[in-house]
Length: 136
Image (cartoon, rainbow, N blue to C red; front, side, top):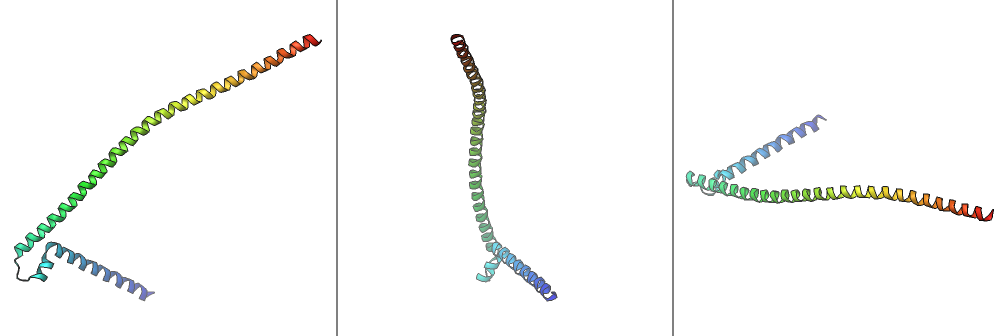
């Protein structure tokens, strides 16, 4: 168990060192010191700094373009959402009024069926009255 724990901690420490070295290497490459010191040792520091700044400017420009494109897509999406919401609101009103009309129709159907049954009962009663008077 101790051996396993110490192996894990050693692995974690090693991974952290590798990550730190990788980060440091990327940082140096971005600033141009790593690439400049390997390629030409006699180069001037001023030109290396200028090249690094130009690369950084290019990266920032690319990120700015991506951000502007993303903002354009977000604006388009927001506009579509607004349109969809407006349509939803208009349909919601139509559905509510249709629901009211259906409720009114259901009520009228119920009263009509009551009137039909009542009229049928009156008809049967009149028929029975006529038969009673004629037969008896």
